[in-house]
Image 1 (tube, one colour):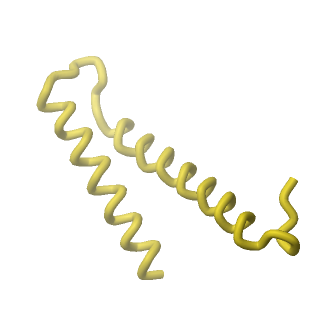
Image 2 (cartoon, one colour):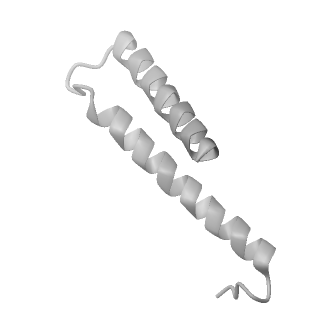
Length: 66
């Protein structure tokens, strides 16, 4: 649909947005996978959010550094 040669900026933006969506899905999946979802309480919810933020920030920093 988009030609990289005709619209390089638009192509880069659309491609980058897709990569960020994929990365967020992987980080969220890994954060949820490590918890027992049969016994959810407020502590588990906070741990899940903190784990997600930790994985997201460290992944972003690693991507920026590389």
